[in-house]
Structure formats: C-alpha cells, structure tokens
Amino acid sequence: MGLKDVVKKGTFVDILLGMSVTGTYFVTDKVTVEYPKEKLQTYPRFRGVHALLSDPDTGDTKCVACMLCPTVCPAQCIRVIGEQTPEGRSHPAEFEIDLSRCIFCGLCEEVCPVAAIVMTKVYELATYDKNDFLLDKEWLMANAVNAHKELVALPPGAGETRPPAGPVKIAGTPGAPVQAAGLAAGPVSPPGTSVGVGEGN
Amino acid sequence: MSDPIAQLIFLIIKAILLPVIIVMMVAFIIFFERKFAGFFQGRVGPTYLGPWGSFQSFGDIFKLLSKEDLIPDKADKPVFRMAPYLIFIPAFLVMAVLPFGPVGGEANLFGYRFDYVIANFDAALVLFLAVGAISVYGVVLAGWSSNSNFSLIGGLRAGAQMVSYELAMGFSVVGVMLMANSMSFVDIVNGQAGNFWNWYFIPQVVGGVIFFIATLAELNRTPFDLAEAEQELVAGYLTEYSGMRWGLFLFAEYVNMVVISAIMSTLYFGGWRAPLEVLDFIPGPIWLFIKIAAFIFLYMWIRWTIFRYRYNQLMSIGWKVLLPLSILNLAVTAVVIAIVG
Image 1 (cartoon, rainbow over the protein chains, first blue to last red):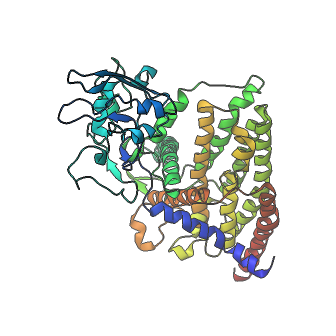
Image 2: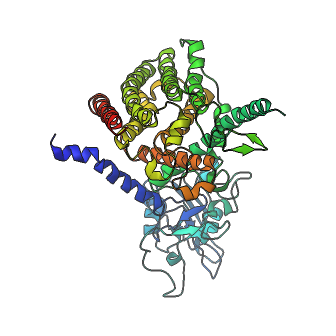
C-alpha cells in the first residue's frame, strides 16, 4: 500500500464520493408512482381487457359472428354463437371471453375483419370471484368506453396517431372514463362481485 | 420549599421526562430512517399513515404488538426473554450522566438551582465505556439462547466485533479526557466553552473519526452490521425473534443510536453549547438535539451508502488501523499536553 492509497483511505475519498451520489438522490425528484392514487397513462397500443365496439347507427355490436377470433385465439378463450337478426344480418347471440385463459396476445383484434373486438386500456383485473373472469357480450360492449381512441370510429385527424414519449403520470380521478373503473362499471357482473379493484371496492 | 427537596423533585421530573423524550424521538427516528432510506434510493418512503407518513412507526408498533409471541421450543427461555432488555437498559443508563444544558449555579428555575443533568458523575466516561460493554451481552446472549446456528454465529460475531472496536474507542476517548483533565461529561462540555473552534474535534480530529467509526461498529450498523448480515446469517442474532420481542431489539438499536450520537456531540462537538457564542440565547437542550439529529442523519446516510465490510476487513480495520492510530493519537495528545501544559 503506497502513500497514495494511505492518503486516499485516510481522507475517505471513496466513501465521500459514494455519499455524494446518495446525497444527490436524496434531493432529486423521486421516481415513485403512488399506484392506487396516481396511475401511469397506458400506451396507445396497450393490450388490456377486450371490448366489443358497437355501430353508432344501430346501437348493436359491429361483430358479424364470422368466427375468426375463436379460430385464431391460441388460448381458445372466445366462444361465439351466431344468429340472424330480423334484418337478415349476421350477429352474435352470445359472445363470451374467458379471461382466466386469455393471454392478451391481441390476435383476435388483428384478425377481426370489421374492427369489432378491440383491446382497451383496462389492466386492473383483480377479482374476488373467478366467475367474474367470464365476460359476456353486454359487459364487453359496455367496456367500449375504455377503448383506445384511435380504434373507435372518430372523424379523421381527431385521433392521436403517435404514442407519447414516455409514461405520463395522470392524477387518479374516480369514475373518469379513462380510468380503469371500466371492469367494475360493466353492467352485467354477477351480483355482489366486480372485476377490478376500482374505487368501488 | 427547601433546596434539597426542590432538587429531589427536579431529579424525579428529569428522570421521567428524559426516557419519555428519547422513546418519542426513537419512534420518529424509525420513521425518518424509512423515509430517508427511500429518499437515498430515489423513492418516497412511507406516505400513508398520518401527514407525510409520519405515524408509520406507531403503525409498526401496533402490528408488532398484535403478532404472536413466539419462543423457540429449545431456546433458553429466561435468557431469551432477558436479552432485549440487556441492550437498551445500559443505553438509558448512560443518558443519566449526560448534560443537556448548563450545570452549576448559572441556571435557575422558579428560584431554584436547576442542573441540566440527572447525575453529575465524576467518572462518567468510565461509566459510559463500562455500560456500553454490557450491551454486547444482550446481543451475545440473544444469539446463544436462541439455539440456532445463525443466531449463535451472529452473536459471536457481534461479540468479537465489539471487543475489537471497544479498544480503539476507549483509547480515542482518553485523548478527550486528557484535554478536559476530567472524566465527567459536565467538565468535558465546559472545557469546550466558547466558539466552535474550541471544540475538541479540532485538536482531536483523529480520535474523533476513530470514535465515530467505532460507534458505527458498536451500533451494529452498516457497514459493520455483520452480526445480522442477512445474506449469510438470515438475520443473525435476531433470527429466532419475532413480534414485539424483535421490536424491542429494533427499539434498543435506535435508543443506542440516540445515546451514542449524544455522546459523540458531547465529547467532540461541544455538547449542549452553541457553535458560536452569539447563539447562546438558544437553550442548550435544543443545541444538543440539533447535534444528535445531525449525527443520526449521518448514520443513516452512511447506512444507505456503504456496503457491509467483509469479516476479515472488519477485523483488520479494527486491529491494524484504528487501534494503532488511536494509541498514536493518545501518545501525541499526552506529549503535547505535557509540553504545552
């Protein structure tokens, strides 16, 4: 150990350098997102739980029961039973997604010829009852409020086309349509239960 | 009311108030430790309980109290129960001889002489070293009585570590003793009267730094927390403790931290005295509190910065660096004082 090392150790240079690093962290802005109070804005292509978009003219779902999504679904979690409407249009009598099987790959969204099934921003899927994972047609159609903007029919140019530069902190406001209260807001959850640890619980 | 009776009443009040204040301080130090741990890592720390999360310690205490009190089947039960108290009773004892304000004729309260110390003990420094050495029994006995290998190794490590660092600590303190020409904390603080350049830290800088490093080891805090090295020993001597019994150890650790910080400021940083004489209008206890807080912050800063030393590094620092340096410091101090007078 030379003189240089002795001086270096005797003056605690390395330790003071380290302490200056932690001291800098002490005063800089914190990176914590206090999750239930504030939430990260999801990216525009985030694959949250599904929604069925409806046709604004008829009010019925856009889905034509073509069976492409149950066919392509690698987890085989979609069940569709088609029927004819009185107007002669093909339409799903039942449309069920089993979330406990779904892997959120988004293939159903990609394959849909009429852009009826989309993935949304909802990611808060915890539940007290596993029956809540069985999403029916009414629930999925109600969840359309949480769909990404550019996937819903909008006048040209109104939708955002580029993702934001990074995750954006947004203040949590209960009940706002952007927020993930979506699952709990679904009208046809089994009584007394709700999917999603929203403000309702 | 005659003066002796007034002194007795004051004594009782002081003896009750001081531990209460320390306990309250500890509750908030534990909160600040967690808060600052977050800050040093770019997080925010506890935020939920109370304003700014400041009631977090009380939440912790309620959680610990509501937990099951578990004593291992094969543990040495009386020793197992006694060990936590063996750590923090010595710490409280030392506070009795520590002055937190002027002592002697200068201070007055309701017309009576009021000494800002519980006991103006002549050999306070010796008491501090002796009682400080007792607290290691708590750690060693906790490790021994748990009947667990991890606990035993943790306790033995703590014992070896304390023996190594107590020596350097003792020798470095003798320098202060020589300069003050007394072993009483009251006289030591009085010897540092005046502005901050009269503090013993300036002439005794080597001794002060050695003392500080040795206290880190005495407190079993990072970077010398080998006694509870999580990666190797689960939790060292704390492995078999749970619930409030474990909480007592944590509590004792922070009581020790307060006391050691108070002694550090008393020996080297003027105790309750203001850094500048013009600031003397601020009472002594507040200055002592500020100094204690500063040292506790420094302990936390070091804890969240420096890694734990390896066991052989710990031993070589203690025996090959700190001990010779402290003896050298003592010799130089003695010679200088003999010459200068």
